[in-house]
Length: 115
Image (cartoon, rainbow, N blue to C red; front, side, top):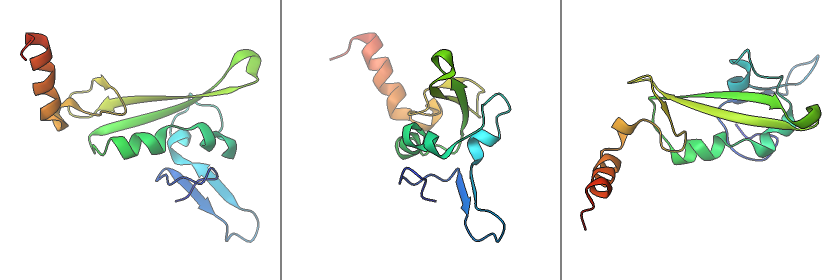
């Protein structure tokens, strides 16, 4: 679904057909009880659409946390990613290392100093 920032995100939900009120929510932020309440303005600086374009791993679970910034004036969006295969924290833009065998070969080559 298209977010208020104009980007595609599967975690954004909107229902404008209700008779009593419109509904907009980020289901990823709603799942995290440690997060502040989501506001439509948060979509403008949210990295989740970019992460999902870079990482299509189904084994990576994202956790979105909205925190208040300096003196409560600004809001920060933090993304944590966990590989469901091994339970380790991973880079959200890369995902589970098992899903990228070429990346492991590249790391080994760098460690060995092969040219």
